[in-house]
Length: 188
Image 1 (tube, helix red, strand yellow):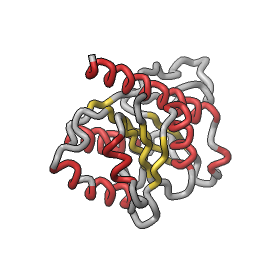
Image 2 (image 1 turned 60 degrees about the horizontal axis):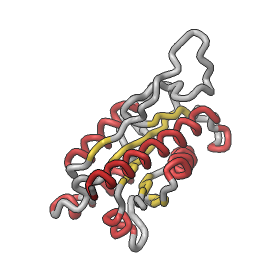
Image 3 (image 1 turned 90 degrees about the horizontal axis):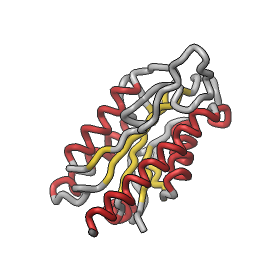
Image 4 (image 1 turned 45 degrees about the vertical axis):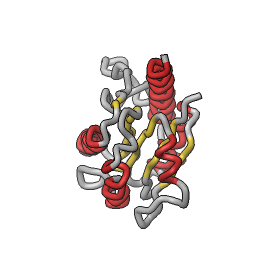
């Protein structure tokens, strides 16, 4: 059985809701990064034991939150000994605007994963980009490299759109399937 972990920071609760949907789809454990940028006791060991690590952060000012960045900087310890090498990696983000420079955040997560020698998995979803597309369609925000969601700045986490949360669930499911295939291939 593969072990999938979702490690994330959420400033206002929207990214937490997205992380929960990703974890639901992946059958994953959740590891929140706290308001001070720290993990709980034993969380580094959980990450080391995982077959796949899905990372999430809100997009603030075109990148990850400072709390996520603190976690990323602290990951230099497992990086130095290559603890995460050949694990499956993926990422997701949320911001208040449709674009919001979310791609910069996903590129940051991708670069972090590459520095760790991980294997990145994208959404594998076609975007909802026709005239008939509706805001609640799967992958309406249109990302290939990781899951994106949009939450207006005056919307509560409970008001997140079902389509964005379903995109997150389907993304989590894809990452877990990729991890199972990767682990099975490595064991063969």
